[in-house]
Image (cartoon, rainbow, N blue to C red; front, side, top):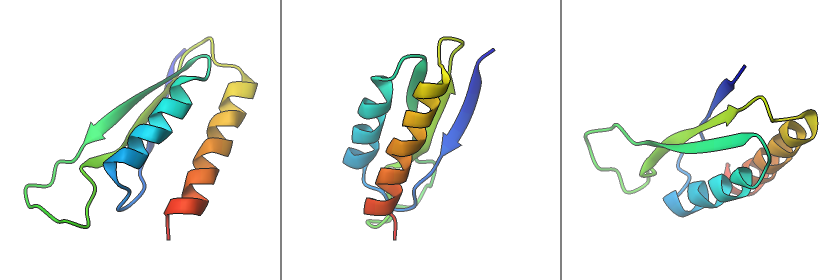
Length: 81
């Protein structure tokens, strides 16, 4: 059974979302997609990306899930105020 999790970091730049996605895609059983921003008004301080969908396939083991959390914790501590 596949499970899916939505991750959002307020104000995170597009480049950093792409970096997170690239790291997560290296893990076995983990698939990542970027969620486009839906706001109709441009805000320079708002990211072009609304968040990430992280999908865990049946191949995803406990080690991969733990690594996902470690990666997300790293980015939260370095980029989210």
